Image: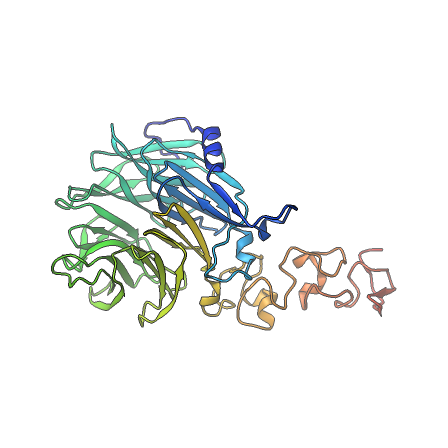
Length: 455
């Protein structure tokens, strides 16, 4: 990341101290526990405006109007499948936000596709909207892009290759703008300024060939990335789109927003799904009596998360409009929902100042044939011992070859245990003699006649 457009030093110590003040632990016993046994709630000092998972699904970042960005390691939580999806649970906060803002609160957040850096959008009264870049390893602020004078930067999204950054900004009922920036130089290569219309959302297609914008004027616009020409408009003036998302295959685009005004039938919030190639409206889902603020597709396309002013998250099948389940826990409007890249977790940020994380892996289909290491155990699809007796990579179940534990006390763990070549790390002697027992002797009472741990 080489973008340097202005620079302010990062106040790391102040940020860390301030962040720790807002971590509230629940149900901790007097004795020390493994972090995976602790349930925690992470709270900001003001409404949470954005959440984002790192591309490797190991870190969750949240941004708030308290001018703070907090980050936690969620690696262990991928394995905590004993927690029901309706219960909020977080591991220990391993990294207490080294990022501090500029005094006016963050409105948007995104990781770079390589996961090395993070960007956030905010407002500087003296300069207008501003986008900050930070290196995640050092916490150093790398630079800023100034979006002047459009107001807060409320939407960010990276091109899949990481070469371009799209942003949306503006105040309600005033002229906002959508911008396209070249990341390596900070050059502004494109600007859209819909008349008296804030730009609420931006999104690149999965292949990066197009990007979409959603504005208060009621339109979702699709642009060609290469030359920034307008390709198509969806749903012009028939609702106010607050959020947009491409399906993982790039063939559909969904929008959710406010349909409560005059002429909208007082629905509250509708979700619309269009065919990208033809512009045909394929499905309209009436999911809430209140406006919708945020939507996100699961990585496999089987679920759409929808949330907003109704204080709950609805998970719905985006092709049939069948509701899968509802997640309840927030007490005020939800501003942001995001799936992790492996589809196992869903994070949400709310006006109630809470960040919540939900396990939704039990709601998706087969995971032994999706090309994703769903439980982050180093095993993929048919190579994962979980898939020997089932169709899901779960991290637990019958397999003990992915739990970071020497289950049979033979000196070998997980993939290093020869048992795991064709069985489970659950008994000594299962591999014909290579297990850490006594050379040429017995292994758990069974003669193996082999070489046990080299003894």
